[in-house]
Structures are given as structure tokens and as C-alpha cells.
Length: 393
Image 1: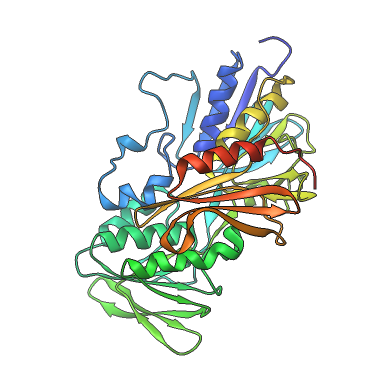
Image 2: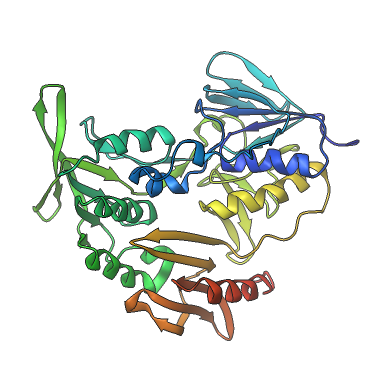
């Protein structure tokens, strides 16, 4: 392809980075792609980590994002962390002391799991393949599991652990699970935990983790809550959200506000530098501000738009309404749209209390979001109508 960059450096070799490389080749880019990844693994899918991979029904090979015969012709630089970026020269510095330079840079470094301050064994976060391997090794028969945080990752881990026959308690500081992403429908999810034998404690933050000495070091024994109560636990999974992995961009001059600030098509203030995936905060015309989205579909779909920006083309379709899904206790939750906090809600089919429903969120006469619980056909129909709405506040 003439007139565009000859070499594109993609920093981040997970979903967003891989989707960008694939979009570059799909757009006819025949230059050099250099893929930099902190993990030693080739691109893999993260959603199964909290579900099938933990339960043992999904293998390492099943996680691969690369097609059987796919060859992106990329130069892979794996197992080393990016430590700095010079936007003027499009030069990325690596932890091993080397430097990678290109004509354009895609920042796709994802996000990092928030942690609780502890060095106790048996305490886990779940963000990477190595995290999942370590957690799976601890989910032994008879283990008591405490999940801190009732968000998507926490709920999915609780669901998987319960299906393995383990004693599971979920602790959530907020009044209800998923109240932020689902608005007034968040409390409905609480019944899923109860119906599957999982104890849910909402509205009580964690004070500290407690442990005891063992032959191999200090191991977690429980979670002390601020009300003085304690949850006994052999395994603790911390699912309290994630932060954008942009610390390596400090000093670059780029705008870092809860993620790398980008315009509505992924461009940063630095020519030839775009952001995509969890680490980026694209400008959202509906919200009127930069907004970071951590969902799988956004990382995949926005990569095509970011490539359009890099190449100066306009072949990518508009991004659909933001969406996510979550599998919990045999129920698929699907959500699409944007909530600003003052929507009204109607139940268009089924009953939310039975985890089989289609719920629509309205701002005035406009349907702006939809939640499906075990209603994939109706959900997809309403989602398409959301995509057709004008992008305006």
C-alpha cells in the first residue's frame, strides 16, 4: 500500500493488538508489522479464562486467537515489556534495553487487575493465562473460596467454582452486584448467586486479608470485613476492576486520563500514534467525554477503525453500540448500549427474577440500551436497532 506507513509497531499482543494486525492486513497493508507483547504467549482469548479454562473444559490450544492457517507476516517480540514511547520518532523502548522504531505506533497494552495489598499465598487475580493456571491449581476439592468483587470476572469465577462443588462466598462493597454496568437491573443478578448455593454479601467492604504460617510460607485463611465479620477462605480471588496499562507512557507527553486519550476514531494528539483496546479512552460523543471501555467486542471492532485512522482510509463500518456478555450459572447475560444514569426500564419479554428476560432502557422515547438474560434472538434484534440510532446526546 502506497502513501501510508511502511512499518507499524503494535505494542500489545492480545486481542486488541492482534485485531489491529489482522485489520492492517485486511486493509491491504503490505508493510512491516512488529508485535510487542509483555507476556511470552501468542495472542489468546481471555473470556474463557474465568469459565471453561478454570473448569478444565477449555485447553490452552482452544484459547488461541490465531486461525489454523493464519500468517500475519508479523515480527513477534514477546516476553518483554515496553517501558517508554517517543511519539516524535515512533520509538518504543523495551525492558531488555532494546528499541523498536516504526512509522506509526498502535498502543494496545490493555489493562492491569487491581490488587489488594498482601503477599499471602492463595490470593489471586485473574487477568492473564498465567493467572488462570495458578488459580486453577488452587481450586482443589473441599476448598473454601471467597471472591472479592461481584463484577463480571468475580461472578464468573464464583459460578465456575460453585459448579466444581466448592464452597463459595462473594463479597461486594456496592449495594448490589453489577449496579454500575446494569443500572437498576443489577440487583436481579443477586438471585443467580443465591439459586446456585453461593453466599453473597453486599454493602460490606473488605478491611483486610488474614493468613497463617504453613510449611511453605504464609497462606490466606480468611477475609475480614469492615463490619467485623469474617469469611473463612482457603482461596481468595480479587475481582475489583482494572486500570489502564499506560504507566509506561509517562513522560511521553500523551494525554493519560483513565487511559490513553483518543478521539472518536482512535487518534491521539501525536501524529501516527493511535490507541485501541482496554488501555485507550476514546471520545464518546454521547457522553461528551473520553470513556474507557474494557469489553471484548470493543477491542475487536475498534481496531478496524483505528487502522482506518492510521492508513487515512474510510473502509471500516461505524462501531456498533457498545456491548458485552457474561456467562453465569448457565445463564448468558448480554448487554448493549450506553447508560447515563437517568434511564427508565421496561421488561419486553420474560421475567428478570427468573433470569429469562429482555429488558430495554429508555431515555425519553429512545431505546438506548438493552439487556438480555437467556434471550439471544430478541437481544440481537434490539441491539441492531440501537446501532441505527444517531450518535448524539
